Image (cartoon, rainbow, N blue to C red; front, top):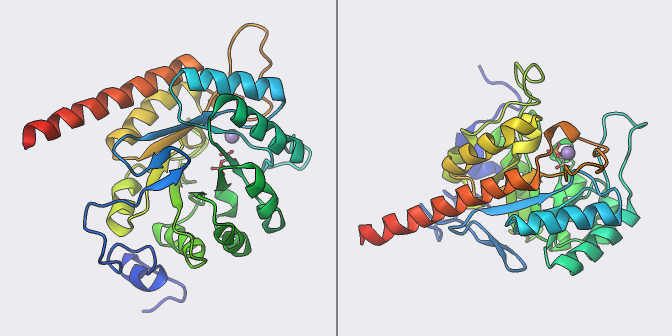
Length: 298
Ligand code: PEP
Ligand code: MN
């Protein structure tokens, strides 16, 4: 029986030839494309750590979190200026003001910035302020947005749709690649599957990391914040993702000093800068161990 629209891994050479490891013979079996965002290199031996607030809420909050994540060892700053919220009555982000804040905080701290763009008409504007554009889970199959993001020439962080198969995710990446933009970093952020929402927000699909690496040369990172939705799970999920071969992490952080306001979104999954520091140390120890292993192997 054939089913309309049904695709599997055997169809990837047709769906996404531009990013398929099988179709692009110049890249050998192990090689990952390095996606550079300033001095930050996704796909290299050292996993990249992106950290910051869920949403940009004010200049002071963003600067304080940025300084704290930098001190903890993060390589890049995250923060939403345009927030995709379930309810239109909830805080939607600061919009343009949020972009200006991100740019100022980036200049102040030296951390490159990634932020979400939801509207194809805003790609050019967001590109003027951010070092990397994030396509969120809800927009992974917004094809006009993917095309505009590809045309921007900016590095793109492409989150996995919350119910997307690997074929659909890589098909989405192909839309960006087709605009002659191969600076794509994939991001697993948890999928909606039974029992999402019972004891964690989503189901963190770590198995997809080796599968992505088999099929494409693009780097892949993990979001332990949106995949778990529970702050106490984020450190373990981060370490597990690194053990599975993730090229990096994107993590939500909030300050927890007495008197600091609770974040307006996703407060329950925000970790402290102290916990972020533990994750960075875990990564550094692992990178060192691997370097020693390689040195002994030759
Ligand atoms: C985010 O990273 O701010 C976000 C909304 O994530 P996702 O698109 O994965 O839900
Ligand atoms: Mn969030």
